[in-house]
Image (cartoon, rainbow, N blue to C red; front, side, top):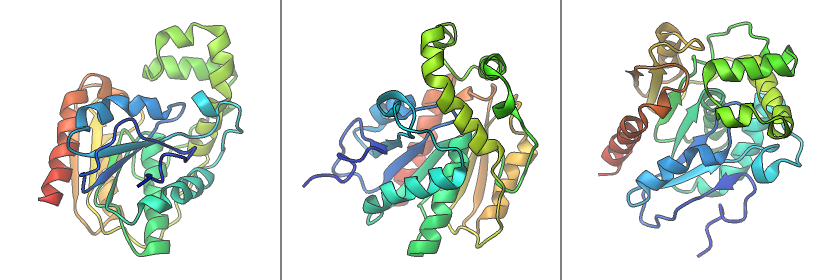
Length: 252
């Protein structure tokens, strides 16, 4: 049987685990791509199915117009994932990806009266906690300076002008989307939310991350890790174990 993810521009599946009872869907950060989550898929390939979203404007979709609103990203992601929603899904989103994942979960509840089994929100404040941010209005040097300060993009890429010209439009579009996003109050989710936060992340305080609890009736937990916005690089194994333990406990 062909998996609907196989022919979908939005979805990347690096490994196949046909016996997985839950599919983990990974949502990239601003400027990120599906390949960021290859190590997660590789580590979990014998226990859980992992897929990752590939937004327009990057890697093999670099010739497509990048999207500039969270609503567009969430609408298109929901439509792409809809064929997979006949089986349990869990969502993991980092930074902007956490907000996109939340908005897809909202659409899932509205359209299907269903929730992901767990929403993992990494490196992002709760949707209801707003900050005025204007990185998307900076010139190219300003955007690159922001990326360097967060250490979210390979330093070799940031020093390669030709590569930068290719990726900056998508990065700027992502920053436009997340910085112009405004939360619209609505029904609460019913799934557990797990917030993951770097203790020195300039983009989210522990208090802002704790407000994810206000968005669900399904229970809330916060895990902290030493490090900044991309604490994931230092704590990859611990994060993977956390996700695995949470999801495998739900399927026993």
